[in-house]
Image 1 (cartoon, rainbow, N blue to C red):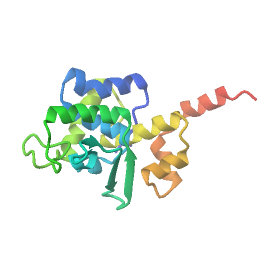
Image 2: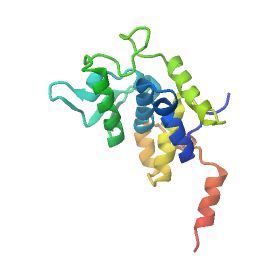
Image 3: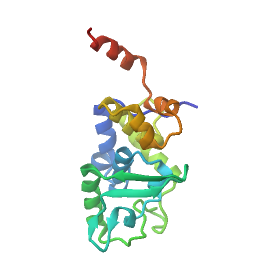
Image 4: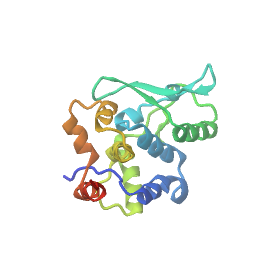
Length: 193
């Protein structure tokens, strides 16, 4: 079995992101991709999100943070929602027409009282990856890895990413970043002492 890869190329990432916006419009799927890329949640945690996790009904406004207990680690995770996430959630919320607080963000088409399954999430991620022409093994976990890879490329220290991911070791975080020879070559080529 091949290792799940991040989407490293920015153009490919834009094509992938916009598949459910431009090619096969589906606001639920597009929102799932955007939240996955911008929060680095595991798919199991992303799928269990309900509207009350992102929107404060009493204050009639979106929360600043998503706070959840990770299914895998049992640790609490607090994630600030950036403007990209807030913008898509606001649009999604308006289209949804005042959803119930306990409604899932990503409901199943067959049974709206349940979220889509991990299998369905995998299929929709895979479909966008195939359309994009990505040859790497792209899965739901690629959203999480793509977040880390691009954060690292923008200068976020690996120790911070380890903390964000709730990894127990730096070795795991290094593996997540999928640093390859071409990135190592760039370091050598750009250091002039």
